[in-house]
Length: 483
Image 1 (cartoon, rainbow, N blue to C red):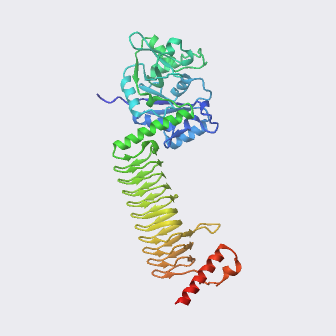
Image 2 (image 1 turned 180 degrees about the vertical axis):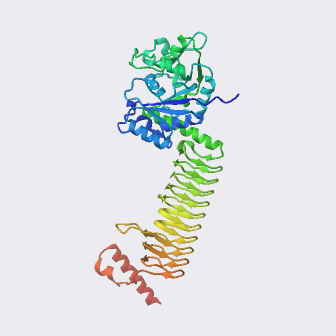
Image 3 (image 1 turned 120 degrees about the vertical axis):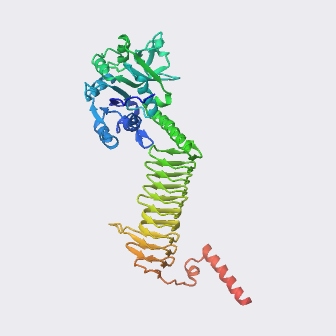
């Protein structure tokens, strides 16, 4: 069967306030999950249809919605519904943005249905053919709140009746309209011009168009889709439920593509995340934004990565990373923090309680324990001693430290930027390095040790420390006499 022609247009209804979200600070359709707003999810689902024009009807807090559209879908055409008088009214305004002489299919979708799939929409357009209208419907165990699909004696669609206008018999119908339609544009224009507000809500219902077509004997089609692909979101409980469904869907796609997800119930990924084959996601893993996971990498447990690239075969455990690049065969964690601008070469080891920020670390270098590396460039196969701090901030500006390749820095070092340690150089434990260390040199910057004998016995007499010291001195004295 040939593919159906692309729709003339898609109309997205995104003007409503969504009072049940209880969100005075954000438009309903800008709430979302998995790295996209609800509106973004809907636009992603309709994009494969390749419509000639995508019209988004905006109303409540329209400046914010239009600004969001410019970021995610700059080719979409916003149309303002200044006063919300119903879905039919919104469609009538949207049609004014289209060429009235053009022939073709117009698809109408709600902006608060983030679980819509491109497959369901493609099936709708394919089934539409020469019908005046085709509905996307679902069967629900509890259809409360949805418009019911009323069929005639032959099983054809007779009308859609809203919950508030339904009779007792109609309320028992479990097939519901999902507010997703395909229409013939010319017939739709003619019908919405005749809509009335004579109903329980005093609005122009788009669903009344179906009744008009049925009364005129025009063909009306219907395509059923699973409820978890058509559910709308009206409050935060439904938003969380939709996120769970969507996350399960994404993880199943990744698993079927060759990714191991040890515990899907505790693993969350965004829509823009890329994961290559044989990667393993351990429990408690969150992958956000444009994160990319390489072949055979292991992530988690308890790891959160945002806009971060992880190379092949790397192991990242109990780590938080943001806007970082991690090479191949790297080991990180547990309890490491990679802040934006961190770049790790192949084979790097980042150990426990290490924090990096704008740090460029060469291949094979190790930063094993308890260190802060900020605004630094470190060469290849260098070892950074435990409890090292790169002192990058002078109270006004940040400065950069450079450590060469094959260098060895001692434990408890401080590198006061700007400073440079050359290739093959060493620094002594406990040093505060404020001057450059030439290649191959040993940098030592610490005071000579001085022991004040008997200080504890004189200054802390009667304490546990003094008693312990006294016993030890007596034992040393006795050993000396025996010797």
